[in-house]
Length: 195
Image (cartoon, rainbow, N blue to C red):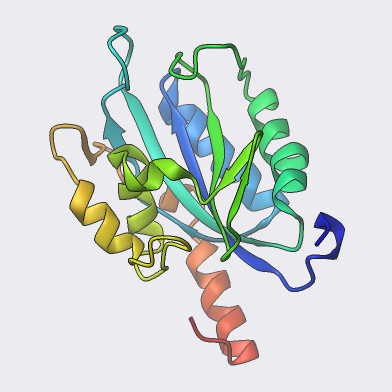
């Protein structure tokens, strides 16, 4: 199926991370996503240790749920990469380098895709607490499209308080976008749609 013919809107989970001015960049990224997409839910913010042996500042990580009719590559190219660019992200060869913002599609509905440039769901959901815990916070009942477990179960299994813990200002994203949960509740009530 081509990306332009996906039909119904899909629920998409986006992982967000930053370790360069993270308090500012996480909020800015979520505010832009809120203005330019159908943002439905926002996780708390989690302080996380960097991956790898290279000394660098700790990360702040979060996750959001949005709905889209775009395909995954179109969403990544026309929304996520554009926001990263706008917030000064420079992508280099070091996947674990410091960054102003990192926006990655973690789950795209029930789509399972394994290609050179894109794997869905993100394989790190099953191995990295900094990915799994924020996703579990934003959509605990959503099932992993391959593994079958609820994201809440996966997050609990990987939760390591020494590696991932609520940030001092854990509610910052929810405060920046207080209407997000309200929008979701209004749309469920208007359409009779349930989760």
